[in-house]
Structure formats: structure tokens, C-alpha cells
Image (tube, rainbow, N blue to C red; front, side):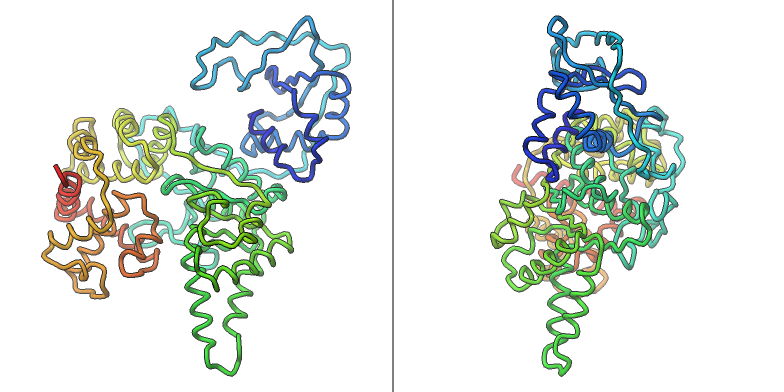
Length: 523
């Protein structure tokens, strides 16, 4: 927590370099009840942190705690180091050594009572989560999921269950385009993403003015889109009147092109473009996903540049997700990259084992799946790359159990996923489309083309599902491969196959047999 707090203070643009220097050398000595003991080098440092930097320090500590106060009266007592009793640096506020630290942690000494301790008190001026949102995943970690009943997916306003659409899936909000099930309380934190979540929460609360714009980058399937939606959903909970819009770069591009096309040759000039500009420049929070796909689209980038400037100058919040850090974006002008780098850039990495287990438990719990912990542990140990891979493996196991009306066991999981465990063959989207076409006695062009015959549509849906399941491609990129289709179309088709696998043996067999053929390619 202290490490994250220091990082937030270092990124705080409202602090001068001299002010940031006062935090160097400050060490978290211990946590006792509602007191955090910080050791400082001298009384001058103690005085400055108490009188000049009190608010900044408390805000950073609160954000590093995930934005939720863990104690009813959160105090910080500061006392200077005494030469005869040095303080050992620690990286966590507990006696347990952090993961990977093989050094034996010495018991933390009881602090000697100071005659007149300096206490910095937290002022109760910030509104936090509603009770429904404060409830975290850790509350259910010890529960047995085997007899679980479906739990409501939190979302919408103040944790109310989200509206469900076809196949029992949460519907995207028609105005904001937010997925109501992607919230901070359904985002499982771990070492790979905790700091990104902390900064995202600060932006959502409106307290992260120094993190504008926020750029989140990382590989596909690691939770970037979840964080973008969580920011939007929490912003609406914190202040219901906030104007929020989530958009992918594909949607932004298509809307802009459509506005140009519809204005072409009209006497009204640029009425559609004006409406487009108003739509994106009059929001309070703009969340744009897969920004890397704007690379090389000169006119769209020019439009986005002006949209970005308009929002930034109006102190509106901008959050961008990408597969690479801003400096590595291809075919972007330097002036736009420099604006991205004015804020803060955070990354999300592949989750570690403990986080993967927690993610699987969350998926099983919120979906009402009856999955023993040993099965979840097995999946978490075998699938290490991303969250999408974990969810796909879990869906396959539960689909087979549902079709055969049998319980989920380790033996069933081993049998179902053995072809995934036994090969490292890279599968490309062209391989998938070609194999699916051959399997259904179709052509490659049939799969990616516009025809909607029933047998072609089914084959195309299965090919999309397999591409999502067996590759790291985003929904936007999959849509481009399949004839330039919209990412929402891809998402809808994937849901159809995912649900069909649990209801129809035929669909399950198609997907399983094709997976085996693709995984064994070249053997």
C-alpha cells in the first residue's frame, strides 16, 4: 500500500519536485489498530508532512487502499527515527513477507510511546462506495461454490442488478454503451493490476485530476475493457448526472465516416459532423477502447485530436485503453502521443496463480456455476495467459457437465481440456476459418462473406467463437478479419455459441471436434 501511495505522490503534478522529495526516506513501520506508524528522518520532515502535505498524503494512502477506508478512524502517527533503534524497511503493512520475498520477516516492535505524538487526522469529506458496492469478492472467498445459487450481477445504479437481454446477458446501456456488469467490485485485484485499479478508481471518483488522461495498456484479455466500464459505471453512481460515453476506436471511426458521407453533397454543410462533435465533446467522461486501431486513419485521428483537446481544456476526464504504451503507438502523430503522456500511464499484466483462482471463483459465483474449488485450481494452474482463456476453459467444462447432466469433477475437467494442456501450437485466424470451412463443406469466402444462409451463419458463428477462444485477438480485430463486421456483431455471435454449447450436444461437438483438429495441426 505504501509503495502504491508513493507512486501516486510521484505522479501528482500539483506537487513540486521539492515537495515530492519530502516523501523520500519515509518508511511504514507498522500498523496498529487504526494507526499507521510512519518513520521519518527528522523533525523538519515530520513538521512539513503534518502541516503542508497532510491532505496529499492522506489522499494517496486512501487511494492506495482501493478508495475505501478500512478503519472507522484512520490516523497517521509520525515519529522520527532514533539512531539507536533503526527501522527496517518493509513493503507491506503486516508481518507476512510479500510473495517472492524469501527473507524472514522480523516481528514488528511495539512503538515506544511518544510524549506528544503528532497525529494527522483524516477529514470526513469524501463520499465513498454505497454499501452494495463496498462488498468485495474477498467476502465470499471461503464459501463452498458447489451448491451455489446464481448471484445477481452488480451494475446499474448503486449495485442494483443489471437489466438482462438475450441469453440472460447484461445489456449495454443505449446511451453510455457501458456494460453494467463490469464494475470495480467484480474486478479481481492482484499484483498484476492493483495499481491500475487504484488509479482507475481515483479517476472514477473525480479525485484523479492529475491522472488526465489515463492510459491503460496491456495484452488482450487482461481486463482493460473491464476497467474502462468500471470507471464509467462508478462515475454514474458517484454523480448520477455525469455524462459518460464508452466507445471503441472502431465505433468512433465508423460514426465519423458516416457523418462525412451523410453530409456529402448536402446544402446544410456539416450538420452531421456537428452532431458527431457535440456527441463526443459534451461528455464529462470519455472512455475509448483499442485506441491503437486509429493508427494511420489520418482524418479520424485529426478529428480525435480536436475532440481530445476540447475535453482536456474543459477539464473533462479522458481514459484510453491500448495494447501498447502511448510511445509505442504506430502511425500516430507526435503531438497526440505527447498529449497522451501528459497524464499517467498504467499497465495490466497476466494474472498470477492466486489472482487466476480468484477470478475463476468470481466467474463461477456470479454465473451460478456449481464448480468445486479443486477444478478451479486445476484450470488456474494450466491456463496462465489471460482472463479470456480462463473463462473459455471454465465454460467448456461446465457446458459438458450441463449437457450430460453430471457434476463437475477434476476428472471431467482433465478429460475435457486435455487437448489444450498437451500442445503449444499457435493457431491463426486464417487457420480457424479454413478449418471450419472445410469441416462444414464451405469455402473461406463463405465464412467471411455477407451470405446469411443458416448453415453458413452457424459456421461463421463457430469460427468467431474459436477465434476469440484460441487467439488473443480483440473483438474489433476479429470483426475486421470476418469481412469488416462490427465488434458488437462478433460479441453477439460468440454468446450464441457459448450458450448453445450448454444446451445442444451438436453445437458442443462441433466446437470440441474443431478445437481438437486445430490444436493437433502439424502433429
